[in-house]
Every structure is written in C-alpha cells, then in structure tokens.
Length: 83
Picture (spheres, rainbow, N blue to C red):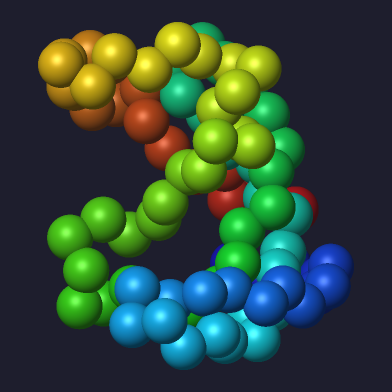
C-alpha cells in the first residue's frame, strides 16, 4: 500500500522518548461503518496488534465497552487498500 505523506507527528512512546513519525490518511471499515482517519507509521512487528485506533477516530463512530470484545465477525474488519 502506498499513501502520500500528510505530515509528521511527535509521538510520546511508552518508554517516555518522543519520536517524530510520518502520518498518512487511510480508509478503515469497522463492520458497516467506513471512515477516513490519520495513522502515524511505525513498525508494529513486535506488538500483538497491527494498528491502534485512538479516541479521535472512535469518538464519533462508536461506543466502547471494554467488558466485551470481538463483537463483529472477523470478515467485517478490514483496512481498505484503495487510494
């Protein structure tokens, strides 16, 4: 997937060290909901989750219930590969 660079973001890592990361905009779909959002890019190969969705992305789309998980079927969750 190739996307144009939108900007750079300063991100505080969990070690407390700030990083300058490139940011792209991409389309994401959560079940029937499709939206565009910004993603800061970094290698997540050593992490369990390939992406993180922040509160800015989710605040107008969904209500989060942390007592439940995997409420959508697996084939409903995908990142769009279109430009």
